[in-house]
Amino acid sequence: MAVTDAVVIGSGPNGLVAANLLADHGWAVTVLEAQDAPGGAVRSDSEVHPDFVHDTFSSFYPLAAASPTIRALELDRHGLEWMHAPAVAGTPFLAGEWAVMHRTPEETAASLDALAPGDGQAWLDLCAGWRKVGDAAIRALLEPFPPVRAGVRLATRLPGAGGLGFVQMLLAPLQSMAGTRFSGRGAQMLLAGNAAHADIPMDASGSTIMAWVLAMIGQHLGYPVPRGGAGMLSGAMVRRFTAGGGDLRVGTHARRVIVRDGRAVAVETDDGEVFTARRAVLADVSAPSLFGGLVAEQDLPARLVRRMERFEWDPGTVKVDYALSGPVPWEVTPAQTPGTVHIAESIDEIRMSGAHLAAGAVPAVPFLLVGQMAAADPGRAPEGAESLWLYTHVPHHTTHDAGDGSISGRWDRDDVERMADRMQARIEAYAPGFEGRILARRTLGPRELEARNENLVGGSVNGGTANLHQQLVFRPVPGLGRAETPVAGLYLASASAHPGGGVHGACGSNAARAAVAHDRVRSFIPTRRKDPIP
Ligand SMILES: Cc1cc2nc3c(=O)[nH]c(=O)nc-3n(C[C@H](O)[C@H](O)[C@H](O)COP(=O)(O)OP(=O)(O)OC[C@H]3O[C@@H](n4cnc5c(N)ncnc54)[C@H](O)[C@@H]3O)c2cc1C
Image (cartoon, rainbow, N blue to C red; front, side, top):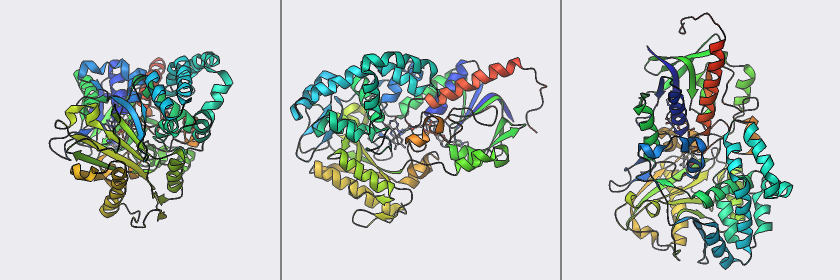
C-alpha cells in the first residue's frame, strides 16, 4: 500500500495542472493514469505515417496561452515552445474568397473591409472592448464560481467597454449579434467558427460569449501549438511534475475511491493496489464516472445521484487525420496560411448542422474544424508536406442520417469511414485535387476516441454540454458548481467541472486550490487520527 498526500486520478491537462500545483505546495502527489501515456486529450503520435506527427485529439491552445495558471507554470523551462501559423484562423468560401484572422486586429480589419466595407471598423470596435475588459473577463471565467475578485474587477471596467450595451451584445445569440454588427459573412464566420467549438446553438445565448472569448484571444495571442506536437505540452507538465519528485503511474486504472466516515481516504486500482491519500483525492475523470462508479452510491447524497442521471454530454465526434504529400490545394490560397480553418458557408449552415445534431440526425453538410499543423509547425511533416486533421460532431443517439442515408449511427468502422468520406468530400469541394495528395488517413470515431481516453464518452470533447443550463453553478449538476464534492477531501478536477472544456487548466487549478484551502482549515481542527483505511 502506497501512502501519499494526494492522489490525482487522470493525467489530462487538468490533472497535470492540479498535480503540479499541489507539488508546488510541498505535497507528495501520485498521479494514476489509465492509458499507457500521460496527457489525456493532449497527446500526439506518429501512427498515421511514421514521418509525420499528428495530434491525437486537441491541437490549438489559445486558452492555455491565456490561462494565468498555465503561464505561471513556466513550461518553457521544461521544453515547451509555442509556434504560430502565418495567420491565426480562416474560412474559405466556395466563391473563392477567404475570411482570415491575421495576427493583428488592424490586418484582420483591412482584410474584412475588402470583403465588406465597414466590417473592419466593427471588428476593431470588438477588439477595443476586449482591450478594456479581456484580461478581467479571462480571470472571471477561469476562477471558481462565483468569481468575486475578478468579477468586481470586470464590473469596474465594463463602463469603459460600453457598459450595459456591451453586456447586452455578449448575451445576444451569435446569429443576431454578428448579423447586426457585420454586413459581410467573412467577419460573421470568423466569430461563428469560434462559437462552434462548443455545442451552444448559434441562436442561443452563450454563443456570442464563446465566439468573443476565443476570437479575441486568437486575435491578441494567436492560436499557438507546441513545437513537436500536442504531446510536448503535456510532456512539459509531466517533466515539471516529476522533476519536483512527483510520482506518475501510467497504465494504472483507478476503479474505486475509498470513502471512510464521509471522507475520501484512498484510491484502489484495477489491480487491487491501494494508494492512501492523507490529504485529498482529485479526480480528473468525467462527472458521470466519478459519481456513477468510482465513488459508491451509498457514499453520495441521493439527490446528487438522481441529478447525475440527467447529466448531458456534448455531441460525439468523428476525427480524420491525414498525411498529405503537399499543402491542401485550396481553390484560392490565402496569402498567409491560417492554422485553424472552419468550413461552413454561413452561420445559418452551422445552425442547421447543430439543429440536425439536436434532433439526433447525422448532419448532411457537416461543419468542419480543420487544422493545418505543418503550417504552424513545419517539423510535423517532411518538407513541403502537411499534417492535417478534420473533425466534426455527430449525435450520440442517432434517429436518422440527414445525408444520403448511408450512416446508421452505430458508429462502427463502416459508419466512421462513411462519415469520414462525407467530410473529405467537403474538403475536396473547397480544394480540388485534395484526394490526390493523401498518403495516409486515420479515422477516429466516438468509440475509438473513448477507447483512447475514457473521459471522451461517445466522442464528447468538452466533458459535458457547454450550454448555459449546465454551466457555472449548474456544472456538472445544480448544487455542485465548484470543485468541492459532497465527499470531504474529494475534488472534481476535470472538464466536467466549471468552467468546462478546453486546455486552460482551470478545473485542475480550482480543485488543487480548494484542496489546499480545506487542508489548511482541517489542520486547525484537532481530530483523533485513525488509520485511514478500514
Ligand atoms: C478531438 C478533440 C479536439 C480538441 N481540440 C481542442 C483544442 O484544439 N483546444 C483546446 O483547448 N481543447 C480542445 N479539446 C478539448 C480538450 O482537449 C479537453 O477539454 C481537455 O483535454 C480536458 O482536460 P481534462 O484534464 O479535464 O481531461 P482529459 O484530457 O480528457 O484527460 C483525462 C485523463 O484521465 C484519464 N482517466 C480517466 N478515468 C480514469 C481512471 N478511472 N483511472 C485512471 N485514469 C483515468 C484518461 O485516460 C485521460 O488521460 C479537444 C478535445 C478533443 C477530444
